[in-house]
Length: 320
Image 1 (cartoon, one colour):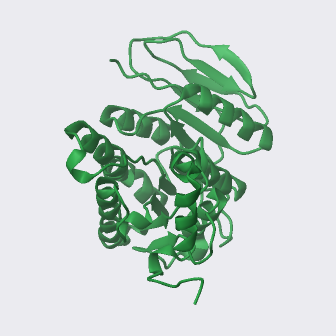
Image 2 (spheres, one colour):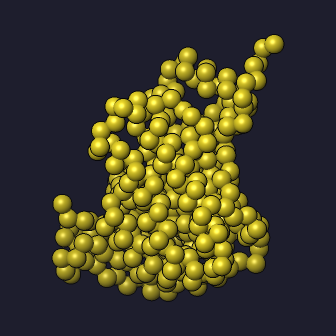
Image 3 (cartoon, one colour):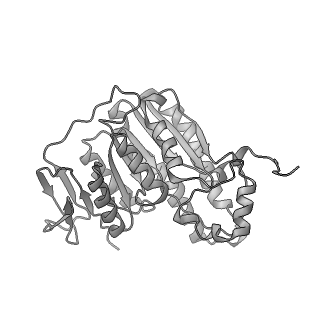
C-alpha cells in the first residue's frame, strides 16, 4: 500500500500561503475551516504546505512561557495527547501534531483554530517507519529545521497472558510503543540540536516500574522508554537537549473505558491508589508542559509518575 500523508495548516487569522503539493491522492488545504482542493503535481507520497510569512522561532526569556517555541506532539487528537497539544499551545507554543484518523484530525484542527491556538497536523501512523520519516520531513520544513519540543505520546496496549502473545501482537506493541520513540528521537535530533535548547518528553507508564496483570509486553516497552530516557539525557546533554518521561496510572481516556467499566475492578483500582480516584488528562499534560518550560531547565533524565501515589503504595489499607 502506498504511503499517503495529508498535511493541514490552520492560521488565525488567515495568512497568505504558498503551497507545494504532491500526492497520489488529491490533497486539501484547510484554512480557517475553508476547504480548498489542490491539484497534485507528481506521484510523490506526501505534500507540504508552507506559510509565506513565518514568525521566527526563538527561545523565550520568560521561564513560565513557551512563546516562540516549536513543538511536535504525536497522537494529539484524543485523551492525553489532545490535552498536551492544548496545554502547550495555551502556553504559547506553535504545535504540530499527527494522528492516523484524518477526519478526527480535521475536527480537532477546526476546534483549535476557533480557540486561537497555532496548531497544524499531519495524517501519520507512527508505527510505520516510512510514515515517520515523511512526518519529520514535513515538520522540519514547517519549523525551518528547528524543533524545541518533541512529545512522544503515541502508545497502545494488548492485555493477555504472556504465553498467548502472537508474533504479530508483539511486533505491534514494540513498533508502536518503543520503536517509534527511538526512531523519532533519531530523526528529530538535528532539529532539536539546532534549536540550542530543546526538550523531549515521552509518555511512559507506571507499568514500567511495577507489575500489572496481563501487561508483560506493554510494560517491557515502557521500561525500555524509561532507560532510553536516562541514556539520551546523558548522551545529548552536551547539545543542551533535555530528555524526560511522564509515567501515568489510569487516566480518564477512551483507551481505558472498557476495562474500567467493571465496577469491582474500578473499586480495586481506587483501593491501591492513595488519592482514591482516576487521573485527568490535564493532570498529565501539565506535568509534560512543566518539563518543556525553561523553568525546568535543570531537570533531565527523570521519569515522573503521575499516578495518585499508586507506584509507591505497598499496602496501606483504608480500614484498620
